[in-house]
Amino acid sequence: MQKCSLFLFSGSGNTRFVASNFASELSAKYSVSTQEIDKITRGFETIQDDFDITGIIYPVHALNAPAIFFSFIKDHLPEGKGRKAFIVKSPGDPFFQGGSSYQVRKALTEKGYSVVHESMIVMPANVFLRFPDHFITEICLNAKEKIASAAREIIEGKERRHRNSLLVNISTAVFSAMEHAGSFFFGKDLKISDRCTNCGKCIIECPVRNIEEGKKEKPVIGWKCMICMRCIYGCPADAISPRTLKFFKVEWYDLKKLSDTDRSTFTKTENVRPFYKRYREYLDNKEAF
Image 1 (cartoon, rainbow, N blue to C red):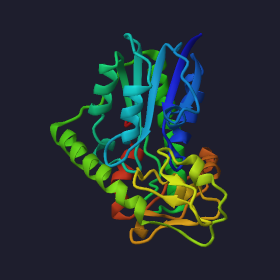
Image 2: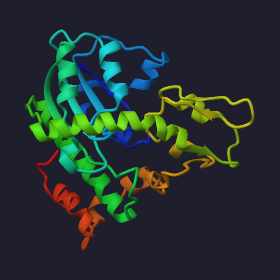
Image 3: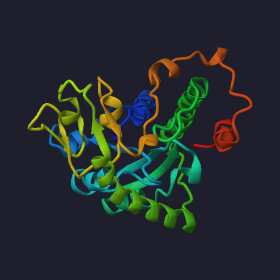
């Protein structure tokens, strides 16, 4: 059986959900392994260079892959030597098709990989807007279906690459640069409240080692934040929140519980707000992924 290695980054858990479902679907043909790239970049894990095909699965940050992904591809991903690769982007909004995949595709090509398939799996947003549970459930159920379709195409060898227009390429470059610059200040805007139990989870799990043990009881947040939201949503005491950018944090949801809903008994969300229109178009289009 051929081997498939999936490399992902997940802050809040949405992209981990996508990768897990891809692994399950792809197991029909491949022996699949899954690794989170920040465990590799921080030296906790190593890569076994024995795979036949690789999948790059990332959450969309400002219409692009997180900066950590580009350093991973450049410094840690084994040379492609003509091996196939596929890209999966997981935005919280179908706007601009999740941004351009041009930069990720270029990085993989320069590393020696042949990018044969690209897909977009929209998950519930984890910043700005908290959807009703029923709509989140529909997004998750739809994600499972689109993952199954995309995985089937990969198994069958069907090629699919997104068309990155000049407008999308430029928008991605601009917004990505702005997000990268602003992320440092977002980290310093985070406040750790008195609910903090000093358990150290945020220190251990920060993908860029931006949180350190403080001289007093609470951890200290530095200037290397990448706005992955992992510390915010992963804190057992819910002790980390933005001071001024409060709208970034939303009430979290039980992703597993909502996604385990029986599809046969589920009815789609009707009369959604105007803002949801592009979500409805994406959800109703069985060919969009």
